[in-house]
Image (cartoon, rainbow, N blue to C red):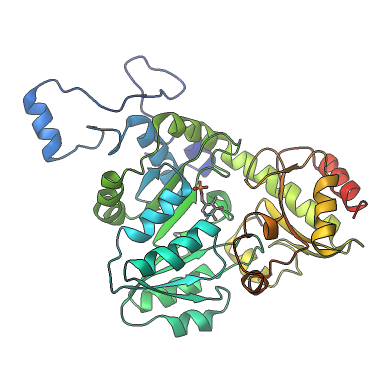
Length: 393
Ligand SMILES: *Cc1c(COP(=O)(O)O)cnc(C)c1O
């Protein structure tokens, strides 16, 4: 019935389940378990769960299921499994189907905890990982080999906002018999049809745009019913990464306004990026929809808008960047993104502090680099705040 609904309609209505009271707003089923009418019914549920049947909240819960169905409807995925955080989703998507002896190819520019899984955890279990520059297709081609089971990338990298050609990498992965798993946080489900581009599995930290108001941790994995139910679900339901029903409800409400929020934030982001290009106190402005962006063509091809984040290289290295951060009044210093509040991060001293100076240099994370996540404030106010802070650099 939802098949021909447009995304905004899906975000408001898809997945809704109403109790006998006919509530307008989705109910929070804050329950870990469920009672059965009879011993026979309990037995039957443990043999096989029907479509809207539950036995234990680690396996599933009606509020969580509403969130999963709604985000699956937006993404155009057959199914979804929600998790307690974005990292539980990434961990599940990667580990659920891998075993010792398998090979993985991953883009090098990864979120810190994703890098930990690929660089430290997988090798410990006998899974070999080859890292590539995600924007260089020849490196992907050279890295896949017999035994490559999975390719993993972030569609837009953090914090340098490199854009990877998903259709091209999907082709390389599929020719090698591997699955392509995409962490799509920065591109958002609003701006990019990642499964249509050829990805097999899409992962979100719902903590970011989907909540979008800085309240809860959450995550979700989307893909074919076969992958979600046969590969992922057994792993996640037995290892305990389930999303809490309360957080699922917050995320469900977040989805209702996701499209509106992301578009408003992305509009302001490109406005500000455009206004700042060439500023005397900046070495560089990075945003996928600026013509100066190295993968500008790929970004325009695979995304409808350039996202809600921009990065700046402030002149004067760390000192310049710190003066800029300390000079901001509206934009808050924090490491979240996708929030209604505009947030600024200095990756070299916070999120990417753990890396060696050489690793940071290889990823383009200079001491002057700052990441700006644009929120829902008035664009002119934000522009004034940012140019005011730059004047103090
Ligand atoms: C935040 C983030 C994660 C991890 O999500 P959590 O909800 O913090 O666990 C993974 N990947 C990317 C790209 C992120 O931005």
